Structure formats: structure tokens, C-alpha cells
Length: 141
Length: 141
DNA sequence: CTTGACGTTCCAGCGCAGTGGAAGCCCTAG
DNA sequence: CTAGGGCTTCCACTGCGCTGGAACGTCAAG
Image 1: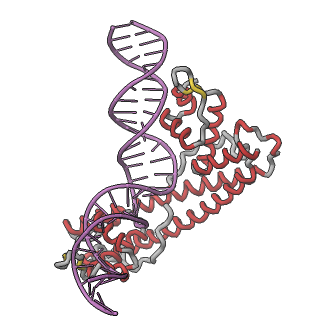
Image 2: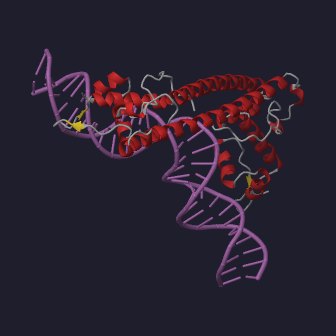
């Protein structure tokens, strides 16, 4: 199967497929005499895995890691579990950050109702955002 | 005051201060005969505003916007409120995405306990991450 | 024979908020 | 006089996951 068909079957673009090969999450296929890439069914499975792993929040680098482990030392289950755990912890942290930020924004929003535009000093740009906002580290967006 | 002292007083680096000037969130100060930047107290207030606005989740582009509005048409309160509202909505969306993702990861994690490593087929790389994971759009990290 | 759809390579850029480094000036103390 | 610390400019690079385009090769249909 050529790259266009693989793209059609997986819902990816040919660009993305070549990119995946370049970053090592899709093995380089054999080539036709013309130089065209010639994929087998395994490529479809592989790309399905990549998509699933992405949907689980893994980066391409982590996915490549998993694939490498699989290729060199068998089932990467333990490695994958560790990754999932650290991602869960990551998500918890980010959810907490964003929730706190959400509360801050809400506080500013509701405080804004009390403010008198006349008291707004150009030097501070806008009193809706007071300089004494807690110096919360800018969250890992 | 020279840039180093401004940096010391605001907790930023001189690099960052010059960068802020280049993206338009800090006005270019007058220069000493030597060519050195010479800041007044207003710069401290301005940087405090930038930090506060960042802590509220605004991007430098949005902060520049606010500053421009302030300079050209007076108090930007309404604009700022609109921004805060859209950010709050944004945060809600992202929190929901991450929470859903967190649940997915948890589901994979707990399902993994039931799996028998022996049934793990190299073609699918790792059965802990099944291809039928909901094709959730990769969240706006 | 030509057209058009496909394929190939490589290089560049997006957005975001800086950071790093090189090459050179300014100023003061020793 | 020289060393140093601070300042100037400019350009490149980081991470991440692609995406766009140029310039070219390949193949089947008309």
C-alpha cells in the first residue's frame, strides 16, 4: 500500500506519516523500485497504536520510547504503567493549577463590579488586574 | 535607573526586560548619553502589571492589547472583563478536557491489572493501550 | 505526448515566552 | 593601563507536533 492509501485508511495526512517515520514512531517501510514507500497492514496497526497512545496523553517521544522498549526487551507493560502513572500525577497537578487559576480569574471578575472607573490610574494600566495578585507561577499551559 | 537595577527590583532578568520592550508590553525608556536604558519608577509599576496579568493567565499579546487600548481610548476595563470571561471559559473547557483524560488514563491503569502479559501481541506494541481508545482530540495541553 | 495525480526530498515556519551566546561599548577601581 | 562588570545589539535556539512549499521523479489515462 502506498502512503496516500495509508493516509486515507488512518485519517492522517501523508505529511504526518512521513513525519512520524522521521521521529521514529513508525518504522521505515520497504520501497518500490520507483522509490515509493510500500506499507503492509502492520503500519495501520502501528498508527492506530500511536493515535491511541496520543489520546492517552503520551508525547511522540514517549511513544517512541515504548516502541523501542518493545523492540529491544519484549513487553513494555511495566514501562507503560509507570508512564501512565506519572501522567496521571501530571494531570492532577495541572488540573489543580488550572482550577486555582480559574478561581483567581473569578475573583478578579467579581471584584471588578465594585470598582469605580474614575479611580483607575493610568500608571497601573488597569485596576481590574491589581499588582498584588498572588505571584502564582504561570501554570504549565 | 538602569536595566540591571530594574531587573533586581522586579525579579526579572535583563534579557526578559529587553524582550518585553521588544514585544511592546514595556515602553522603550529614554537613553543616557552612553546609550544605556534609563528607567523611571513607572517601569516598576508596569512590570508589576505585566506579572499580575500573566498570573491571571493572559498572554503577552493580550497584555499588549490592553496596554494599547489604555493608551488610545482610556480605561480598558470592559476589554479586560471580556478577556477574563473568555479566559474563564477557556479554563473551564481545558479543565473538563484534562479531567476526562485523567479518567481515561485511570481506566487504562486499572484495566491493566487484568491483562495477561502472555496475550500481548508485538504487532499492537502494548495491549495496555488498546487501539480502541476513544479517539478523543488530543487536549490543548 | 501531455496532463494530472501521486510520490520523493529538503528546508522553513507556526506559537509562546523567553534563553544563550558573540562581539563590542562604557565606566570605575586598582 | 588594565581588568571587571555592566550595558548594547543581533541572531539563533528551546519544545512540540506538525504544516507549507519548492523542485523534482513516477506512472496511468487520454
